[in-house]
Amino acid sequence: MLRRHLIATAAASFAAPALVSRASLGQNLRKVKMGTAFTSTTCAALAMPALLKPEGIDLELVSFPSLVQRMQAVASGDVDIGNGGLSATMQLATKGLPMQILANGCDGGWMLLAQPSIGGWKDLVGKKIAVQSGSIGLVSLNWKLKQEGIYGKVELVYMDNQDQPIPLMRGDVAAICPFEPYAALAEKNGWGKRLWVPYDSPMGKTNLGFVASEAFVKKDPDLTKKMVAAHVKATQAIAADPAVAIDTTIKVFKMTKEVAELSVKNLFFTAESGAPFVSGLKALAKMMIDDKLLEKEPDWGSFLNLGYV
Image (cartoon, rainbow, N blue to C red; front, side):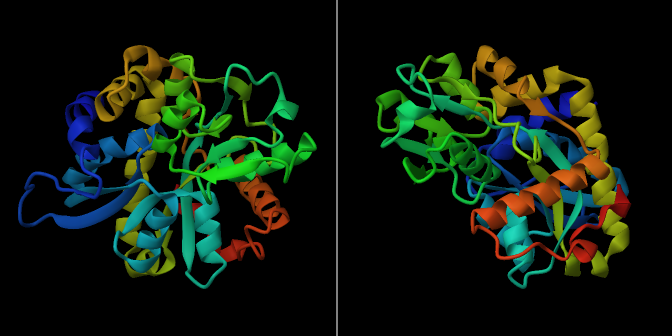
């Protein structure tokens, strides 16, 4: 049932750049808005409306190209809950906007690709690299540039993920660091080659969280529990059947089967939120502080609310 629902609703769910309205599910269902992204790391969100309907919840998916906008919408209450970029979530949480991580969202999902003529990191000196501002991709890239001794010797150009492949194809940038399926799109078309598989930093594959504002959780813990349960179940379903993510990527992002298959190999769908997840989060915070992207670590006692998992 989940697989059929994902494939049937994929195109409609992400066709519009803003709010995606669902068909009327009855007047007695509770309306809940969930922020999500234009990346295949959030494929599991498409299964959640079907899981929540029997719980009396009409879930609307609201899609944002910018991860910062998505987390600002969660913090302000414009959406109730969301798939959150963990770097952006930490930034808001340490600036007086109480946010909570409720579960792991998805691991991995990004890649560093360079033009075919680039032989190594030293060849990037003086050249441009496209990356999404405020993203985990940026944090990991900064770490790697330091490791290679070229930090500050390249020009970072901030672009949303879907905007990165074409400039690489045209030669406007020497490398890109996008999330899937845009990394696979550039690689499969020969516009770029893998220069770095970016999971050897202290934070590893840490990427996405299932996130809510502290006010939302306190106001309705029962609703929070149902949302987390649906997220976990949807994530487990898509992890168990890679064909779901492949078919969803084809429908949602208008990708070829070959691109979709390659992108899914770089996605690690999981809701596991134990010690390894927490360790990755804390390593991410330290990396962001080193980059001056974060002034201090969040208050872990209130920031992490993983008991619902």
